[in-house]
Every structure is written in structure tokens, then in C-alpha cells.
Length: 348
Image (cartoon, rainbow, N blue to C red; front, side, top):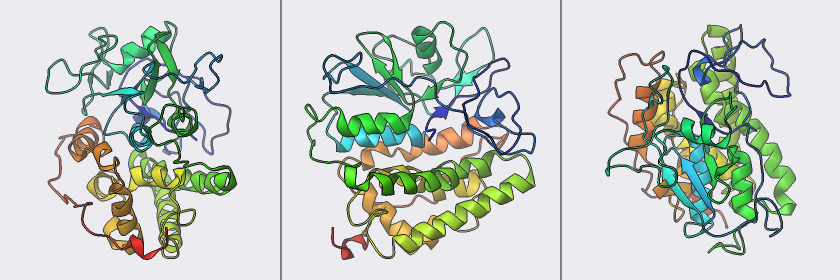
């Protein structure tokens, strides 16, 4: 399941079409905004760096404290779920991280590409490892022949000076299991063996209709694919609402990977997706179980620090000129997710 935030607008860039069939014919994409079928439907392409870190000390990428660095955007839900894992597993002392600026900027003077860039001031984080000006430069350092999109998250190997992995679904699995010898919270297992089939099943329909579904709504260029995406989105939100009326979390009364994956979309829903991506049929606040569930997860120690709503709103409203040409950022609704919730009525 694809989980990356890609960057911006470039006139000439190619990618390798992944080995799965699209429902609609696909045009050559230059960015997420261009990943469109002839029908006007959004079809996300796959991540490219797929190496795995292992607890085996003899592996190419062994789990070592201080060796790896995570590049993220607080605005990106895919990157934010990696940061959430880093925080709740207690890996902050083992894996460092850096956030890019929230608004896409020009990444090179030689072309018109707009994407994730690092700060050059002390107000935000510069790249501490390579002195790169953009995420694009990291990809070019890792592969001189790279022709894909420049996405976050990026899991970087300081020793080999390369990208290990840029697929968030795989990064969170590595953080969950492979670093337990050095994690401060090794007992937390968000993908236990007895729940994996259930988690995988839930992840599949939530990814297709909710995580990626909001993008299908927002990036649709014709009415029919938008209508189809909205229908699937709200059917799945209703399904989640029903599940969460019976238990605290998606897979029962224990927190799992499925919850973190859903949370990063829900926390952005009313602030961004309802307006920017035209997902306004029903707000998150109108779903009692989903709304309280989102507050419940937000209040897990470490999670709130991964949610930077200023970055989130500035990115979406200022980086998609084809959707919001004047870059106006709505003032509301400024929801307080630290307010009380009712989810402790379920036995944890």
C-alpha cells in the first residue's frame, strides 16, 4: 500500500509504472497533481526505494542506534505516521529526524520543479547531514539516474549515505519490530502476529477509500471519478463509525497499526480535506465515535507532537495552485483535540 507524499510540479520527469493494474488508463505523470487517468481519476504511483532494515547484525542495513535519519514533512500524513511510530516506540534517541518546510518551493534553478525544501534559517530545520537544499537533492545523492518523484518520508542511512526506504507502510513495520533491542518502548507491538490478518484487511479498505480516498476526491478532474471517490469515502467512514461504536479501536480494544494509519487522515479531515479536497458531505465532528476516537489517539503520549496543524494547513492550501490558486488559508475550525473524549468507556 503506497504511502508517500510527493512533491510538486516539474515539466519533464518520468516514473516506472508499478506492477498492478489501474482501473483507468494512465497518462505519464509529473507529480501527484498529474497522476491522472484519462477519465480524470487520481491514481497514485508506487514508492521506489524498498530496502529493509533488519535486527540481523549481518544484514546490509542492520538496526543500529544513531545510524539512520528520518526526513519528514509534518504536513504529510504518510510521513507523519512514521514520526508517530518513532515517538511511541521510543526511538528518538536512536533515530534522528528532520522536517522540511511546509510550502513547496523551487528545488533547482535549472528547472521549474516545486517541492519539499529545507530551511536555510534557524527558525526551521536545515538538513543536518548533507546540507541539502531539498528532498530532491537527497534522491539525486542516492541515485544519479533517479527519474521518479521526490517523496517523503525518506529513511536515510548515514553510514552508506543513501536512501534505505521511502515507503511509509514498510518504515512503520521496521520501527515496530526491528529496533526493539534499542527502543525505549519495545513491548509495544502494533502489528502482533495474532492480529496481522485482521490489520491487513482493515488497512486495505481504509487505504483505498479513506487514506488515499481523500486524494482521489481532491485531485479528481472530472465529476464522475470525484462522485465515485466521495461515495467510497463516506461508506468507509460510516463503516468505521459503526466499528468504533462497539470497541475502542479498529481491531478491538488494543491500539494497532490500523489506528495510526487512519488517525493521520482523520486529524486533517475537518481542517483541510473537508474544504480543500471537497470532502464536505459530512464533517468528522458529525461522527461521534470517530471524533472521540481521533481525540483519544491524539492524546496518546508522543502523538500530539507529530501534529503541526500550522504546517498542515499552510502546505495544502498554499502548495496546490490548481486547486486553490490564490493560496488563501481558512481561519478555522481550530479544533481542540486535547479536550475530553469518551473512549475510556471501553475496556482497554
